[in-house]
Image 1 (cartoon, rainbow, N blue to C red):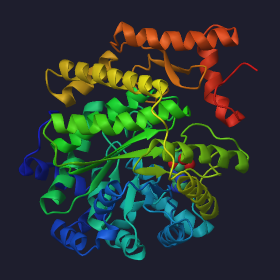
Image 2 (cartoon, protein in one colour):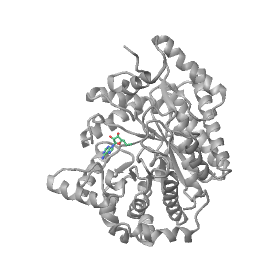
Image 3 (cartoon, rainbow, N blue to C red):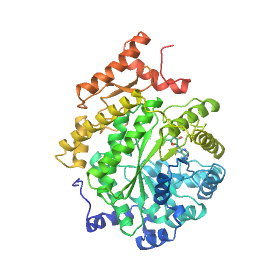
Image 4 (cartoon, rainbow, N blue to C red):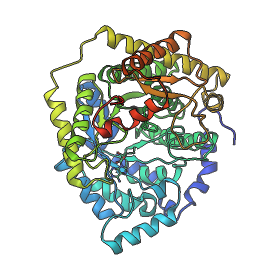
Length: 483
Ligand SMILES: CCC[C@H]1O[C@@H](n2cnc3c(N)ncnc32)[C@H](O)[C@@H]1O
């Protein structure tokens, strides 16, 4: 397999398509001409790209939950409730874990067992097993755009089926849906398979049907430094734009410190736009997505709602195009419709109450923005250098060298040499920068910030501090202080 960051010829795309469509029986339902026809019948209110573009112009902050259950009728009922009672602006369809691993036979068994049990025994909708006609029922039943959310290293068939069914938004990427979600999938493989997905979106775009592609910024959801999330989101955005994608959303997972998260969201929008323009993609719509806290949650629902409210407040004060909302069942498991609605309405209340307020540009905020921009620039320039100009090749070599690195990930593709820890204000810093070739200025900044906390807590910075931070929020605080 020859990985190269160059738009696939349509003939090259067609070469691999039979294999993909034959990998499960429902693949035979996919007919692109019919798919284009169905998309053209959709009103603008059901097209993610149109709604995102309008929202960006009107400076709206959209809300979207996660949701997915095994049985189609229950899934449709759930999405309808999230739209009507939860006031969701965008609807999800979270795909189950078997489907994410291309294990469709087991997903099929999950459907049968769920029918027998009278409740969902899968952690999402097995969309590949249902196929195009069935999934179209979802799109016909609701009034908002529906997005596919999953964690699939090889999402080629899932994309073919759900896009043909009328989904107008597809999350994921060759890095962000491999490293946090798989152990042994080579990066070349997932980057290549996601070029297929992006080239398919490019074929839709050539018909005037613009599918939005959202990059999964939070990664492992465990103390991810903003520059890591940003660098990977921007790389996935550039690789997608190269295949003809015309609408891209880059995501970021809440860290918990208001100034750092605000700096992260504001630099994400600026850097994303700057890199897309620098590489000739001025015609690509870019929006930003904020994920409410992705780490461990408190068990009690009232405390969980406090975490959700903090994520909502941060989004409102920082400014972002869309918020992915958590639920008070986060520490328990798959949320009920009621819990999902509670998270949405709690978030909506904060967004509305803070609508007239914005965070002042303090020197602290400016410094956070400066550091993130410098860190991202230093990482991405090294990735291009290692790839001798080819971003896809550079990405693979950068993970091998540790220039790109993600801690706490299951994947063998990443070294896991970097180590994050919070500073005294709760901002996420690098305890260890691994093989990331940051300048001395950057490294010194992180060391200084961590030393301030170590002095305050009268203990050495180290792994004990990291563990304390990982459990802190579920124990009711942000910084994992020793007592
Ligand atoms: C990024 C994935 C982690 C988040 O995704 C939520 N999540 C996973 N699967 C479902 C589902 N089937 N319905 C509602 N939320 C779901 C988890 O709770 C967590 O917050």
